[in-house]
Image (cartoon, rainbow, N blue to C red):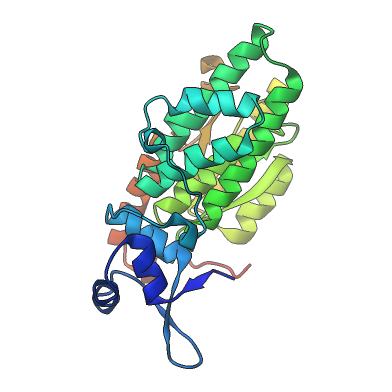
Length: 301
């Protein structure tokens, strides 16, 4: 259940007058719901969406279930990757949470937060591990902290009101779930109804998911390949299945070398979350110009 707030509470959170808040609601800038008694309420996620899209400050973040901080530097993206890596290695979840959520609250694009902060922080941690300056348990613990932060971010998003469906996964044997989780959040941020199926899923099971849901997009993150020849064969079979449902196959991941990529068939390769965001926006624009009645029928799941 989303957290519902009164117009007065949202006005206080945004540092605005209650009359201004009600005017924004009347203009349709803020979506509201009605209680049984006929009173207007605003979901906290909707208030956050409005603040981010309108570049409106949030003066009382706790009302919106966001972390409070006195460190104004955390609102600038420069230096955040280094600070996040330090916090992750120190197991300081509160500090890490504040760094990422404050950037979100400030309105930084999620793709930029993921590419320039979280991804860079984990590259730093990986380099420290290779140089024996960090332990395996620190890297694993950092992943768990990051996943909890990502799940928190996802909970702050409004539910996309879209018939554009995307599903994603990692291949069997690949347990690294950070990239696919970030992909889900980025796709949702640009209006896709995106759902992560999970990690370490066999290709045959992915094929059944595509056949059942007939999504407009299937995304796959590949961080680890147990068997290269089996992966290439399974991936290309998956592409064939996706072609039959007009599903765009999007792939990315550090395990995909240039040589492996030449042997794969896909719709798009994304090196970054920004690339994924741009491709998703392009597909969405194309879908918007196609009359809805001429688009492929969707089977109920």
